[in-house]
Image (cartoon, rainbow, N blue to C red; front, side, top):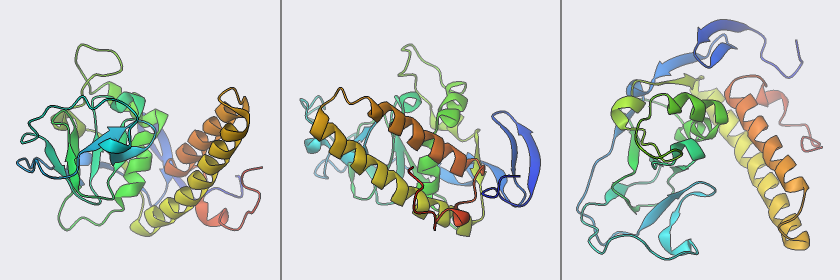
Length: 231
C-alpha cells in the first residue's frame, strides 16, 4: 500500500465509491443538511454562486446585472451556509463567508442542529467531478448543463463523512494547497497571457488532489510536511 494512504480500508460498493478508510462513513445528505428558505431581505448584499469563485458579491462579477429589481423573493444566505445553482453539474457550488441574498433558483444548505461537520469539507466534495456526475442522475429539467438539482432530490443522495478531526485536517490542507495553486496560475497567466499551456495541467492536478483527499486515497496528515507537493 502507498505510504501516503490510510492504514485500513473497508469495502463500500456504493455507486461511485468502492472503498473508504475504515472509520469513514457514507451518510445521507438529509442527516446533515436542511434547506434554508428565508425571504424578505431585499436590502441585503446581492451575492452570486459562481463556477470559478464560489459565492461572491454580484458587484464583483464583470458582467451586466441580470437580476430583477424586486429582491423580496431572493433567498437569504448566512456565513457557513452552502449554496448551489442550477449549474451544479458545472461546479456552481459555494461556501459562504458573508451574509447576503441569492437568486430564488439557488438552493441554500444549512447544517442541521446538533450535527458536527465542517461545511467546507462538503464544499470541496460537491465540487469534485465524481460527485457532479453522481448528482446528475438526481437532476432533471430541460437544459443540458443547467438541470436543477432540487433539495428534495439532493437530500436523498449520500456524502462521504470522515471523523470531524479528519474533515478539519483535509480542509486545512486543501485550503493551503488550492490557494497556492490558484496564485501560481494567476501569476503565470498575467505574465504570459491566456494561452499559457500549463494552466490546464495545474487545474487538472488541483482537481485530482481534491478528489484524492475527499475519497480517502491519500492521508493528508502524511502530506503536511512534504514541501515539494506541487512538483
